[in-house]
Length: 124
Image 1 (cartoon, rainbow, N blue to C red):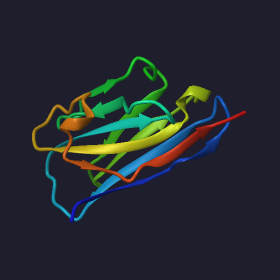
Image 2: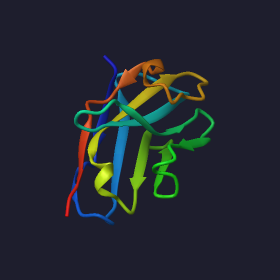
Image 3: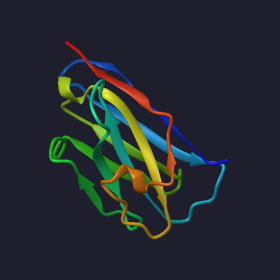
Image 4: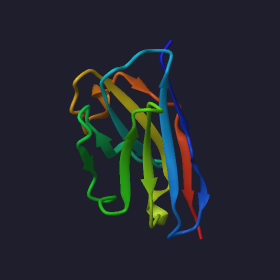
């Protein structure tokens, strides 16, 4: 059974940094796109960032310049480095995998597998 194992959430202050990790297990994926999404209480799930099968990256305007998505092929892990965190970044963050030679999507419904979610709380 395929699982996406997330880690790295926590409670930080405004301006701090966190790095989220997401690693697929239980399956073999030679090529895939990975997206990060988040959902705050009372709000819809929203796109944060994605990395395509060829390592092109795309970001939501709200995180552009602060967040960086990257992939470590040796560890088969995708990271979301979050810098200069703001109160409004507080949410549950989910990684999602789309199989194959995929460019990913900003549409969360197009992904094949999801992580369990990790809480990021930015609080002063």
